[in-house]
Length: 111
Length: 115
Image (cartoon, rainbow over all chains, first blue to last red; front, side):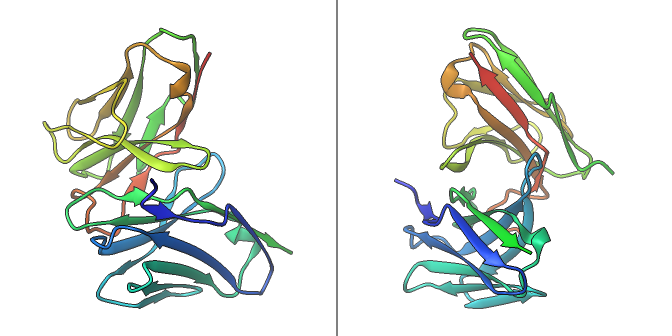
C-alpha cells in the first residue's frame, strides 16, 4: 500500500496559467515533505520543501501548501512555463528516516 | 564539479548474468543511496549508506548487494539478474542521512534491461 499517493498521472496546463499538483499521504508520522522535478534522461532535482510546522512555503513561482488534517499537500506553479514540463515527485519522511516517494505526475505546459 | 555520476548509462543483461552499477559523488557527502524507478511506482529505496563504512537495507533490497568503497563511491551489484530487475536505477547523495534535510542530489540514472 503506497504511503505517498499522486492520483493524477498527468496534467496539461496552458502557458501562463496556474498548475496545481496534488499529493496525499497516509502516514501521520511524516513531518517533512519535498517536491522533486525530473526531466527525461536526467535524475530528479530538488524543487521545494515544507516542514510540518508550516502550512505554506513559497519560492518564486513555486508554492507548496500543507494540510496536515487532510494529509494533503499541493504544489502551485504560477505562472506556468513550457520549461516546467516534467515529471513531479512528491516525497515525505519522518525525522531520521528515509524518504518515501510518490509515483509522480507528468506536467505538460502547452504554449 | 560533476555532482553525482553513474556508469553505465544503459545496460542489457541476460537472465542470470551479473553486473555492478557504479556511482561516485564529488560533494564530500556522507550519505549515499540507490533507488529504482518503475512505471507507476515512484522511486523505491534499495540500499543506503548513512556514512562511510555502513550500509543498510531499504524498501526493496532483495537480489542486490552494495559496497561503500570509500566516501565518494557506492556501488550496486546484481549477482544473478532477473527480468523483474528491469528498471531505471538512480544513485543519490546527501550531506547527512536524508530524513530532515532539504536536498538529495541524484545522478542521471542507469537504464537496465534484463532479458
